[in-house]
Image (cartoon, rainbow, N blue to C red; front, side, top):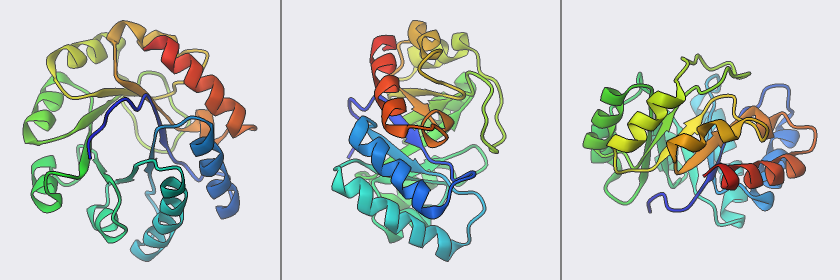
Length: 209
């Protein structure tokens, strides 16, 4: 399974949400226009992450959407997720590919052209590039310009996703880069109306692409 024509990528964040609110928000997003879901958890134990991943996968399976697990290759394998997303401090893409084989999706966070070229060489299926704008998440981010985003997009043959503070009102900023898609976190996860937010985001993203 590889990434194809999946322009709106949801990365989860449980900040200020109960477990029920969290799962409900994901389901609302899945039925309203997201194409791909990444479960990102930095604080949970292995068992907690596994149990949450199982619950999320029940939702994504229902809507026939790929579920990507952030960081944790073992969790991705344990629940038979579509793949894994790796940051610069995580397991190298090459090692993950050796473990997962050719059929699983591997995404990589990159912020510079050398990082992007290395990730592609090692077997990444797509790149997440950013942060384009300041973010509200607790994940440490580094600003990435649209110029760098464009440079990466022009020099790799795998899909590139812009991420970082992107919302319906500012996503047009990435239009010059001609990326494959946009990844969002708080724009959906912290929205008062996740269904409306997802629908508006999808329209804005398709217009920007």
